[in-house]
Image (cartoon, rainbow, N blue to C red; front, side):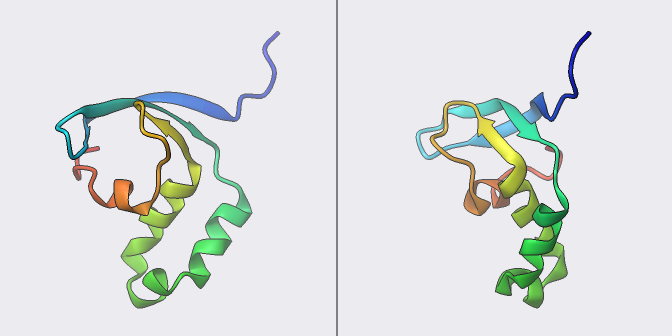
Length: 83
């Protein structure tokens, strides 16, 4: 029997295109915790624009995306809307 799963693999329809033109589509994300939803509320970008909440939240829970060394808000900001 498999244990409780907290991380999930995903494939983005379009993917993140880095500065060199490489496309990053495959990734792993974990389940969000209550703290993942609370901490972004203190972020000034979220306080100025509530729509930014999902960007901060995704940057906290996406563990890997392609071979990028890290996933941060700048990466999530530049994902295509369809992703």
